[in-house]
Length: 185
Image (cartoon, rainbow, N blue to C red; front, side, top):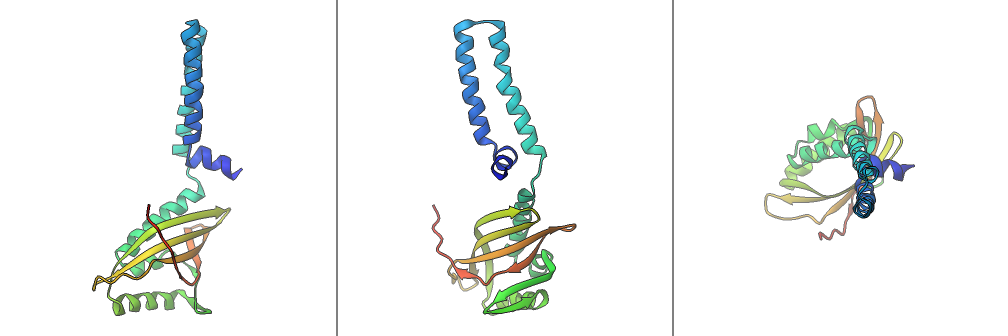
């Protein structure tokens, strides 16, 4: 079911390719017969493609909403606006750090101190992988942190656990970050 939802609502290109092949077969049939009936059949794949396009454009899945939320989060993180980033944290937010659980307030203070101490000038999201299941979601984000001294920290992988509620997607838990091996192609 998840695959069908992804194909029709989020990434309809396989459907378009299939309909294009059907259109090609119908065109070849029309060319050999040149009847009005076969000419009308040429419109079916086009109409189906229009319906798929409308559905894919108009229907927003929870996964797409989470991806949009992550894009907003990325903009705030890139601007080093920790207070805006914290708006995406749930009231029950926890950050797992060295075996301890840090609450929302302490995580914000720690981030601000780290930015100041290490003179962070930029945070860049290199890669994001998103999975959703009902009202729960997980996002693995690989970040690159650059300081004012042009020092680059090795890429870090963060795992954000999300919950969907009346206020949209909120982060409930961030696992302790890990060093990431990231190869840009």
